[in-house]
Image 1 (cartoon, helix red, strand yellow):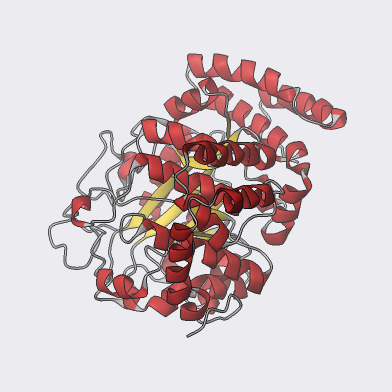
Image 2 (image 1 turned 30 degrees about the horizontal axis):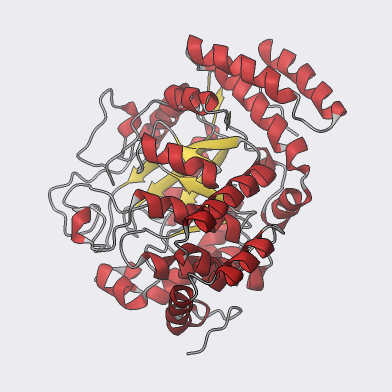
Length: 472
């Protein structure tokens, strides 16, 4: 098969030979300083790079040029997303699964992991626990099981989540991370009011993909890889992609990931809303050392920087799979969303002690949400609980236009400050509140339009008086 970015066939828009040729080209030109300089100059235009150009930057090992890559990634992140970091939490609904994925403890053959599926009453209790932490945005997770986790169950859970209003808490955006499904089911998810549909590819290497997924519906590489096309055909504007680094050669995965982004842009007019970069982690009956494609923290950070340069408008997500130390290093290189206070087990938020017997992976950053918020502000980032764009219809190409035009500073920046104010009043510790109030006062000055500044100040007073959920 030939490479065709506009094809709807997975093996053509993620073409094996094109990836191999790209990796070879990058290795051959990694010390071509003139070429690297030309790619960096193109990147400075903030229009993005091709998978081949970005792969050359990833391969480059000239210390001076690598530092230029890091500096440019940091500046591009500031230009488009400012110093805001959006916070979310995963909510695990069910660990029943019929697949045989070799890297996931939920695989069907794991007979000693307790299987659990939340009832709607239990979903409500989990949501209240998350609201009491201060979360406004969730990513729901469930194994693939047509009997235990049918689409109707997922839809019921979404309805329950949106219905819970506890004290001043409310979940304002539900992102969905469930298995590849049909156009009809994606339409149902859209009608249920989801935010982003997220699905990790795990690996773009088809042969290795089939080995890693020996049984179950997920074994079908093409059906899985073409899921985002069906989601967009079903009317979902915002989709999130990602690979599980460590399953295959990182150069291969990097090229495939960017080819997927290029494909979505070419066919649907808008690329992925988010890109996630998880790494294989230890979990029940899963030993990450069994996979011989692990990458160093340094290379992990370099991958993030090159993704930011290649797709400047796309959000990038780092989860609590990574340690606090790694998250601190990588966050400045392009990350715009992180999870906080996460529990990766079914029903975990209602447990006083973090349960480990049903975790999908070990949580490396076990800090509370308040501690994460405090850390972000001490690092001069604004913790944002904003969900305004989704609820104002600024999704898909409308969000991208907002981002590209630079108007995001008059929209997302003030929304971040107002949602931070809510968190400080309703959930924060005394120290976090003190730091946050000072940050809000300082950051109001960075709102470009005077009229917007005036409105923000008026709304902050109203929030102090008990009003909630203002947004631009």
